[in-house]
Length: 84
Image (cartoon, rainbow, N blue to C red; front, top):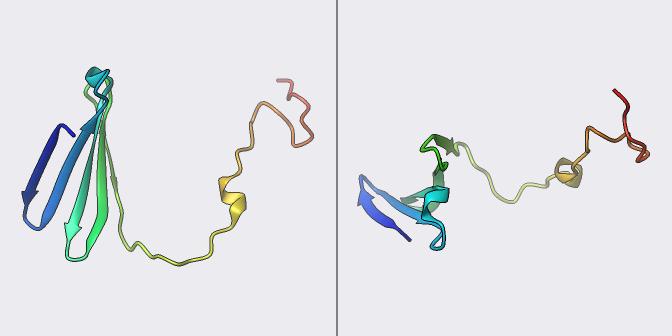
């Protein structure tokens, strides 16, 4: 943990690798009432920022497991390499 702040009903926690702090960092932003992850900000090694914001989050929904299957674009579904 490299940083923590409380402001305007939000808690911000910044994390970085202890063995390579120059590799970048992530800041997690939580609301307090209720305590929920609402946003995270990733800083890459070049200092560029990527912000992800969660809105209208819902819990307890069924999710199709096929959404988490990686289909390698270099191979056809039968495992044979695609020739381009």
